[in-house]
Amino acid sequence: MINEQRLVENFLDMVKISSPSLKEREVGDYLINVLRELGLEVIEDNAGKMNNGNCGNIIGILKSPGKKKVLFSAHMDTVSPCDKITPIVEGRVIKTDGTSVLGGDDKGGIASIIEMLRVIKENNIEHPEIIVVFSIAEEIGLLGAKSFEIEKYQPDCGFILDSSGKPGVAIVKAPYAAKGKITIIGKPAHAGISPENGINALTVAAHAITKIKLGRIDKETTSNIGIVKGGSAVNIVMPSIEMMYEARSLSGDTLKNLLAETMEIFESTVKEFGAEFKSDVEIGYDGFIISEDSPLIAEFKRACDKLGVEVKTLPSGGGSDTNVYNSKGVPCLNLAVGMSKVHTTEEFIVIDDMVDMAKILVEIVKGN
Image: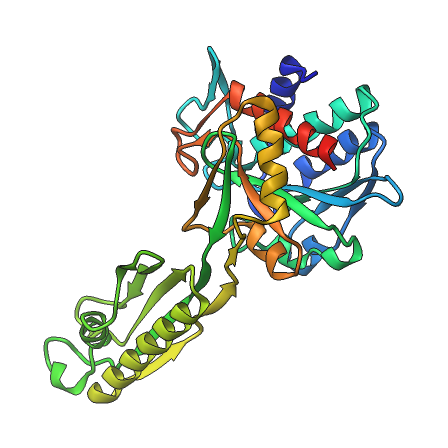
């Protein structure tokens, strides 16, 4: 029932549309037209206005009164470089020309969802009420999902298509995550004439960094300083330094304890040197754990078994819209779409994987 040529053409059309975070307008309009042509009720919410973007989340509803409500979602935005994407079809693989990302993250997921809808309509397949959400600004903090008023639509469960790996992989654990800016404020002085009158912010930061935990903390927890900025001139004692910090853990309590310990070390170190300390580090989203015996996983396994697709349930160190929807009380799985080497100019996706993903979605619909 899956029309491979149509699926591929739709994917290629979408990836050619530039859609960096908060600039999803063109691809949003494309999807509005597609969903309307398929007979769905289409809504654009105010997530764009809430986040200073040019497009809101695109929501499509395929009614089925009295039936179970199932959410299917993928995000519209792509990471840079994505101003001009030239996809190349090479055998059974779609890749980039090496100058940009491909955008399979997450337009591969969108393409499979659209093909699923087309198959349902063409074959008059009995279905639950389907709520489709194509979200904005996932790549910069899950902003579209956070702004989506999911309680208005009351889905019973959801399947989010936003993971690397072969179809059949489901992410059942994802971390709590915190990030923000840590600023050390020292005191400027002439570095050649009176350095003793200054407080070098870099020196203070260095002493603190030797004490805090960075890298792999345990099998569930990581911590990182990824960006450092400071100084104004080589002959001035560095007056301040800014560091972008993030930490993740599958355990919310572990993350909170790590943050408390990290901030205490910075606070005590700056006090020792007579400097100042500011931090806006906070938890940005909650993690989730889906039990292996949950009905959601049982339904996914049933659909995959029907197609002879091997099922793997795995944890992830990354966050997705799935984190947000689970935190809002809707049990959701993050499903692998087949995209590989995402966020790089070597990104690619295998056509067979997109086809298999669409087949799995159709089977999920049939089972509900």
